[in-house]
Structures are given as structure tokens and as C-alpha cells.
Image (cartoon, rainbow, N blue to C red; front, side):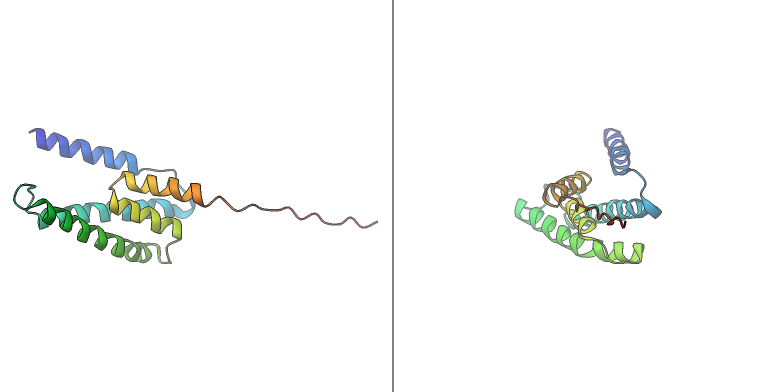
Length: 133
């Protein structure tokens, strides 16, 4: 019973944290959907590789499986997002998906914060027209 409650609570938390403000044409929602879908798929793949038990294998095997699953998620999530969006993903979307693969749910927010800190928005300069007399 405790396990079921924990799974339901984590699913609700994942959905709540993955909701964001709507952007033009729902692009951000589609990227978040790909992030969540790839996170679930990689979690299921990792669980099936280790046999759903931390004690069956050595810690080296568990971390190796985590590395392979994470690498697969990092490679496949931009491909899936490109198919869903029907365009190439931007650098920001790529890093957001990569962060989500490394640390599920929270990783996307951390990656976006790092991206914002290192890539300030471009400055737009106003061009004034010369007044003719």
C-alpha cells in the first residue's frame, strides 16, 4: 500500500512540476511532454535492466546501467522532439531535455537556469529615423 501511495504521489508531483505557462502554438508544452515521456521511458528501461531491485546486482552494474540509459535518453530525446515539433530543436530545448535525462523532473529547470545565466537575452537597439526638414 505504501508503494502505491508513493508512486501516485510522485506521479502527481511530476505532473505538477512539468506544467508551465503556455507559449506560442504550445511549443513549450510539446517539449515538456517529450521530456516527461522520455523520462518515464528511461526510468522503465533502467528498472527493467536492473531487475527492479537495487540489491540483485553490484553498485557498479547499477551505475553503469544508469549511464547507458541516460546516454540513450540524451541521444533519443532531441530526435523525438524534432519529430513531434516538426522542426529542429533549439539549443535551449536541447539542454533542457538533457538536464531532464540526467536528473528527472528537476533537471530541466536546473538546465534552463544555467542556460539563462550564461546566455543573456539579446539586446535590441532602437534605430531612430532622421527627421527631414
